[in-house]
Image (cartoon, rainbow, N blue to C red):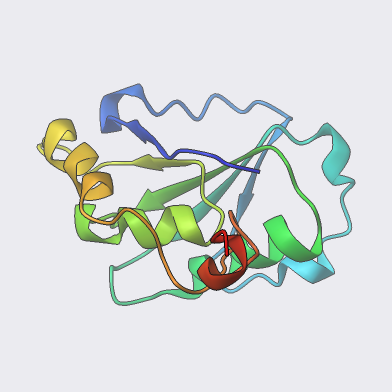
Amino acid sequence: MNRTLQIVAAEDHVDDGNPNVLQLDNDADPLAIEVCLKDVERIDLNFPKFTDGRAYSQAYLLRRRLGFEGDIRATGDVLIDQLVHMQRTGFTSAVLREGVDASAAERQFDRFSAFYQGDAVQAAPLFSRQPG
């Protein structure tokens, strides 16, 4: 599962009541969800403020333990310096706050070519992926 994080401008994020889009509260336990995830296309996880990182754990649990393969979208107080970590924990899209330059957000992914430890996207650590 090699995904890239899609950057979504605030004005392009539509919450139109689609029944295949699930919004999880910040304090919800993804493992306790009683809905069938097979019909869910997107799960919106909220960052009420940038210092509250519970959505990272929610994304990781959804991706790794529950095997959710749809879009996991970060909403709320999303800062561009958090985008790389969001991708590594399982997010596939993030809604930028109004006025944030999308090209500056994209540059965050050019800063690091690899990570030593495994994550939600690449489970194997770097040493086991390297030849010889």
